[in-house]
Length: 370
Ligand SMILES: *Cc1c(COP(=O)(O)O)cnc(C)c1O
Figure (cartoon, rainbow, N blue to C red):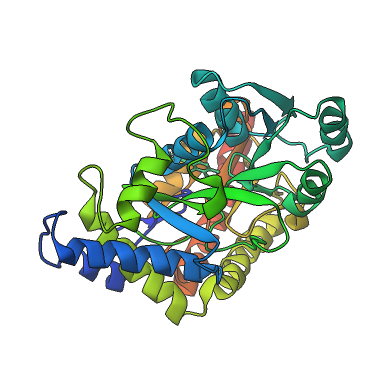
């Protein structure tokens, strides 16, 4: 089967270097070779944002991005703590769902999925209670492609002495995360989005001080258990070691390519080309470019075309786009530009999209005539 160009928000098309890394020897996870690899990845993850390991710890978990979100929220909000959750899409709502499942005292500031965070409303809620210890937010809300304004939120948190728990699953490695200025307790992320590894490995970057502050609420996703074991060159359970090989290679590649700043620039160029191409045939983005991440954009479907028709047409041309979630599924589609995607791939995509839209308009015009 020929490799399709994946424009879904992870898993991504791998580079040859990452794919080749999977050919390395099988490993026992209780031997020094595995622990060398684990140590190396934990350091490289801190290096992505130049973090000092005196202050920060990278904790690895075998599981998808949601396992890192769940480990972060369930392990870092103490029994007497209280969580404020910002919801403006599926992933913000998932943060609330995690709090609900674990019986964590929480309040949500809910928004429509196409809305930016209403900072006044957040501030009002923070003013009404001094009990909040943490605020959870999806940095890049992948539901719509919105890059939430965490800088503004961070200032509110600073003022109200609240720590941030950030879902950085679709931003870590490609967007700015200000570990110095934002009052961050932890960021949850994954190997297989902006870092270009394979699925099966996720991680939490936590402030050291935040660890060991609370009793575990879960056995398998207890962040402290992983942090303790990994600090002593151990692992509590069987890790997805092939995903470690891939992430190690992917992090080396990211560093060689100039780090997150270069990746942000690269994704931004590709996303902008897709936007211009669609704009030229009358298809607009749901959000203005300046409110969008570089990682993913959402667009209105071509008039008169169903998502299925549009998806299947592009799939035949070798491109996998992504549906809208919930009520957006009949209105929009999403295009992510993560992974090993070349300029030529985007040229071909643009030609295919333009041709498809013109054909689609023709067929609906002939349908009208009939
Ligand atoms: C992809 C994603 C997740 C996690 O999804 P998994 O399917 O568990 O990997 C969480 N948050 C955001 C913002 C995401 O984009």
